[in-house]
Image 1 (cartoon, rainbow, N blue to C red):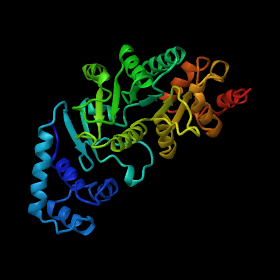
Image 2 (tube, rainbow, N blue to C red):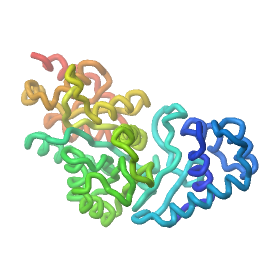
Image 3 (cartoon, rainbow, N blue to C red):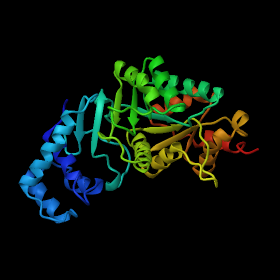
Image 4 (cartoon, helix red, strand yellow):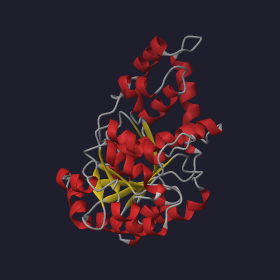
Length: 325
């Protein structure tokens, strides 16, 4: 397994009380000697007693033993490593990725690649599946790598169609690489790796509670935006008064907050009464800069998305005028 001494320092520091992503982003973006690191931890951590260098080294050895005993991992990279992938967007310190565990081609995350996220609901209609496949196929044809979350439904469709189109795909996981979730997609995960793709996660241990696992799904949605040049929503229900919500909405919200381009698949002639497109309609109504994709503009819009020229206000306006008629 490939990792640097810096990776173990970052993971060890993160185990101390009061030390989170924001602190690590502020203090460890550049490698620091262990003496300096321990001094900073003593200044800011919430530990009850003084942290000594020997104490840090002891904890560091424990962390390294855990890492070396992991299965299914090719490497780990951390903030401060020269090869830590650069994320897209404008992000506050508390939401910076600080450690990534990976299997496969980590170079796919580099900003020199054109990475497009395709996400959506768990139970797409047949018509949704068909148009999503067409979109993914066109994205791959234009040189994009497909990012998604390995979930059932639209995520799986995106990954599989990328592979069928002879493209590369990146799966961002809410789980450790030794415990792929959902378990039913382990074969798909293996297929991704076999075709020079990438599995990546922020976690190396299993979640200790359902609450923690749910928060990891939300964090996964954040990474789907951060390592993408454009986030495309295939289809999704909107948040409602019954408390129903979706990871797709969160991913689109993260993209908006990070100033990352966003697109939705939507055809007003066929989708206007389908509740599985409620979020798509809502986003079109609320965000004038969102890009609308359907069969009428598929080839031209995908070319613009991949070439980063997705400022297509005139096309959007023509669609929006008929959106709720």
